[in-house]
Image (cartoon, rainbow, N blue to C red; front, side, top):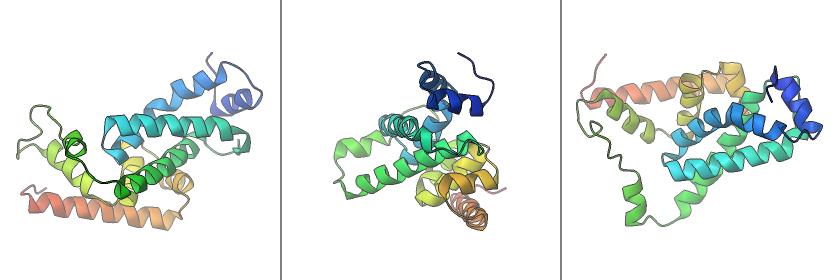
Length: 180
């Protein structure tokens, strides 16, 4: 099933088309997972949160305003699920196994001259709201107004958080010897 636009997909979902859920997942799972992975920092947690977000979207599609874009709504659900999961995670005791889960064993990422590795570490240090806005803008390519819809904050707040995220990233990278 290939639907032409998101509005038709929403209509098919609301009408109970049995192929529509697969179309929604095929079309949006990648962006939802990408955001969840950026926020959670661990593949298994990101998979769980992305799956939960997609299920919530499918259950709540009848309440979706079809005149608005679908992607920011889905990313908003994913962002909320990530916040909830991060809150639960912060209340869990940290085990040695959990600490090892964050270590990336790919070659090159431990090289102090590797800017990509440094940027990953810098992003991990951002507070979740800043990291979320940064990911939605720079990784998902959403404009300010769609980020505002996704996270339920005014556009001015989105701009402020994005500015602060960039500033904190630049400061961290400068302290680590990476200058522009």
